[in-house]
Length: 423
Image (cartoon, rainbow, N blue to C red):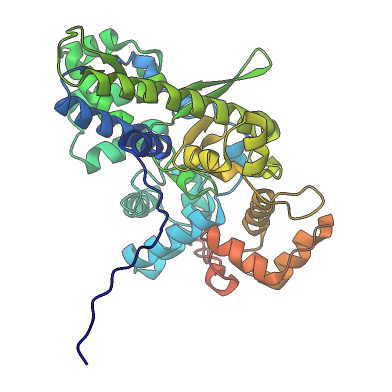
């Protein structure tokens, strides 16, 4: 029997995004660096679009550096975070094989601060370790070669010097700048140029290099920390109120060309409008989130309260999907460091306690534990549940992995032996 061809008509539904909507969604999800690249590509193809990179004043590089130039805070009194200690121990295993040197390195590890800097002098550490200062300095030099570069620095200047040396930028003018960080903090580039005996343009070129360094390499191991980059939002306490603003130095300005007859003017005008809407939406969402998390701005991540995207969507009149896109890659510079905005959303663990606060308490418990007898997940769960919120052992294990903290057996540190006194 011959096959017969048959024609049928069916109805299907398909959602298609037009070019403008797709571009708008891309902008909502992009961070400042990604959006800058997108705009530069668009300007290269459209003569009606003018991209002007921000003219950065010397102080524009300060947002995530402010605390590095400030006097030591209470943070310096606390020990390094558990995840930082675990990372450094792994680096020690790779770089230090001599038993005597590992014993001395253990004393340096005890003096490590959350910032990644040393909290005690080498002379004091050498005395505790029962070795000479010269031997302790040699061990310190090995530790300072670990990643990320800048760990175990004794000052901000040494931290930056280690990073400049790693990238091959430690020339005489750079050395002068690092020796006079007070002038750099105040933006007195002319004085630095006179001291370095180079044109001011040379100082500005090296300032751009310093902008890419991390003043507190240990802070990258704290929960909620954003990677090294320009923040999208800046929040500061001014006269008792919190001021939240876009980081103007992180994004170029977008305008239309003066030539009205240039091709692509309609597309350029549409892009300018979308950028303005993106910035307004980002600021609106950022303000709502940060105002709701005012306690965290004052006391740190341990004070984060439960917050859902539906709550912010209802308050701003935006769709929940829009909130999700806006906070996806947004970093905010706060008095406690640079955080991911998304990290300030947290589910309620019960009794108004957020999961972020529980993770912060978990990290604090492990930081205070006896390194020779670290707490098991069961013991940690019992301690966390004392506040009225029941925390299961599997939840502790999950959060511990999120914080990059190893299990108890891997956290155990054998106390370094003190050398017997000579004579």
